[in-house]
Length: 290
Image (cartoon, rainbow, N blue to C red; front, side):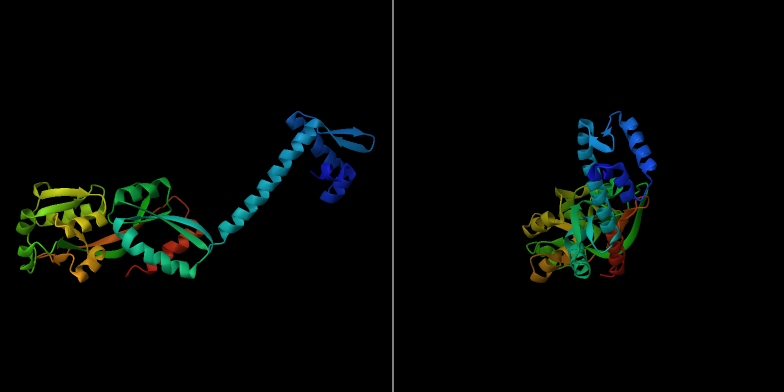
């Protein structure tokens, strides 16, 4: 590039702070490597060949890409800017993470956060493949290389429509009550489904013997089904708090046990978190009492 721009090996050597023989040697080595003569040397004059002209165009692209790479690395090292992709299972993705992201953005306005929502199994898979750097899910899963750290508490409640008058008289729900009712479940792969199965097993209830009238793929769908009188459901109190306050959904506690569970922050221990992702991870863990 220096020889082309100066039209002289001697001048190029001065520009590069090298000796003339060194520049000549590098140029000769480059011609031998690519198998094309790049310059015609006639006396002191040096003129690009047709191969040299083509080569020069690519040299400009290479140096432009080098400069772009330097800029990208500089931005990467700036932890307070850039983009991070995180995943959230239904409850944390819809009812917890949006508020966390909002307060995080107030501190770091130049960091863009992309939130993907799915069930627990889906989000764990995205973390494992590297499609997202961090995930917040409702259940522990045995996956090689993944780290789970508890971050938020959740309470499950037995929710039912106001039209189920017979349940309004009860102070607490028992195993026999659950077995009699029309029941709505989350789909397999959901953290809520897994937590529900464990809680019912603790009460001696086989989930396969419930009167299951529907299985649904989102918490919002279950909320609407309960409000429409389709049946009862075990659901996160966070998800139905506004509906409980308005009277659109009723709930009663479980007799003899509290249906508490944890949400977990998950990341891959063999993948290096980007500086913005590391910032978000540390920020989220400070909010674990939310």
